[in-house]
Length: 468
Image (cartoon, rainbow, N blue to C red; front, side):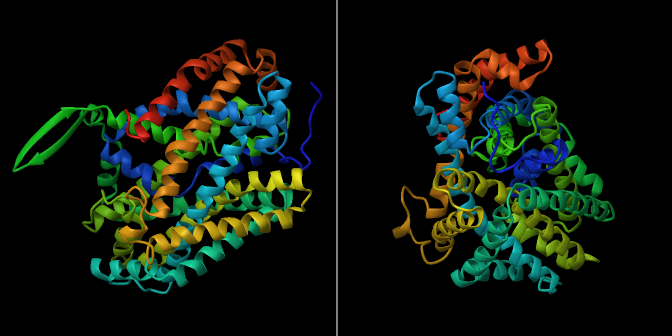
């Protein structure tokens, strides 16, 4: 094979690639979803199952996606086209690249809207709006924000401009410089908040909620009706762990593949991927260790799901000493996590426009950013003027439909096809050449990517669409 080089440049070091890929993986879901589902599904027992799922589902597919990206050295669409030709496979495999780029584009359109909420809350918390506020007051602020399309458009616009500005500057001057500052800042903010949580007096309660193993919750679902608790056998927590292990690493949306295309040739894919998975999990766990002591110290409900961020935590920050300052830091942390993910979502489409349409990065970023911004308006209106039943399709708002399509259909199918191509279509010598690792490690990866990971993703997909 002729050695390919990316026209976009490459990361200056392995560390930068790890920071960039970790930034892509770490997002809003790490800060609230993982801690919440951990506490609700068996604590430490769930963490053990989740780590096992990361090992057999997440890491093998991530290694495959990085490997395909580095071997193709182009946007995901052109990478899959070139590799399919190289391996003597059908040109239809380019659809894997198209699916990933489209999924990232769709996700960014509504992700930017939610990130805009976080931006708005930075200024609201910093301005003392929640100081002494009760649940009704916080709810009124949240409802006032989401019910006002003009405000949401303003914050959505600001966040998209922030993301476009980074991507427009290129790999070294834009993406690399951004993650070099954003990711260390994110870790510093996270551990400052962890230190604050230790001073709340409820730190042990938070640790118990997260880590006290309850294996019963892994296999039984219990509910109390008329004072009587009934439990039935269920594997749903295991499916939750499996699904989150796949989604948390940003697999199947082109971001990891395009970041892999900028990876230096001598960098170990296996070691880098394992480290990225560990850092992603560390962020999620530390976020839980920082959030739940604050929740428990204020006697609030830890199982409030998405509302935990925008409706529960502001009450806690408004009531605690130093809450205004640390609340502001928390929402800055959220913005940083969202920003590092957003730039990875926009990059695959920008790279394709540069390669295939001859646009400069500035123009390509503007085209993709504007198109994404327009699609995001549908998600904004889903929370206000399009929230009525007459605007719903299959009982879902525009926002819910996009989320369901991308997360439950496009990403699992993309991950499955990546596993099948890397494990079954790609010649053994091609993947051996890219991985350059010990034979037993390569053999283990090959077994996982050919048999275990595809089966697990099929289970995740069937569960997500309600079949399994």
